[in-house]
Image (cartoon, rainbow, N blue to C red; front, side, top):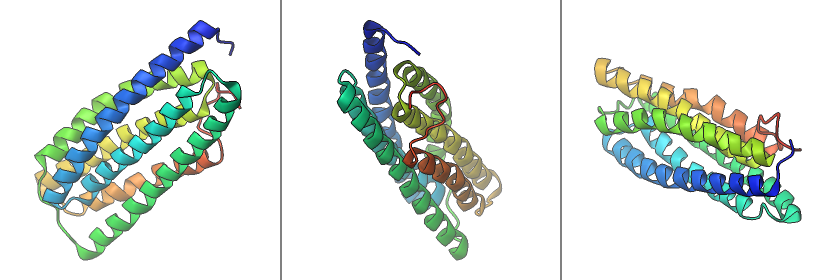
Length: 210
């Protein structure tokens, strides 16, 4: 896909704005989720909060990638490094959630209801798809697998929001304590798969340059 210099610069600026917005939102989301998770004893909610801060790291990598876009040599280097950072972030999250959820199931620890957690998950379910779709357009315009991977992580935050919301709602409505750690475990395959793809230099971007 051929992109003129002015169009490319515009795409970079949109990408920077979107990524900074994601970074700010995830910082707030992470603080609220971890705080609510500690109060309620919810593994899934704490895992969701940790994911938010891992996404902050991925956003910082994407911002670095966008800052050097005007220099082709540095752009290629930043593309590879940003993909690696994002891949490691995915795998770190998968490991954390798997261990924490397994411990919760073995100990049969029942989380308390968390209205704050439910509200955070519900808002993220609306916000994240909008950000992810806009960032995918930027990734296609720039031919960037790193930006695509960061957008994919935002997509996964949407999936995790849906899983988390289901687990918290089932626990609140029916006191199904096991729904929370099972919801957390359901996150792991999605996260680990994306981490492997990013480390291999792929991000599900058919339109992006190699």
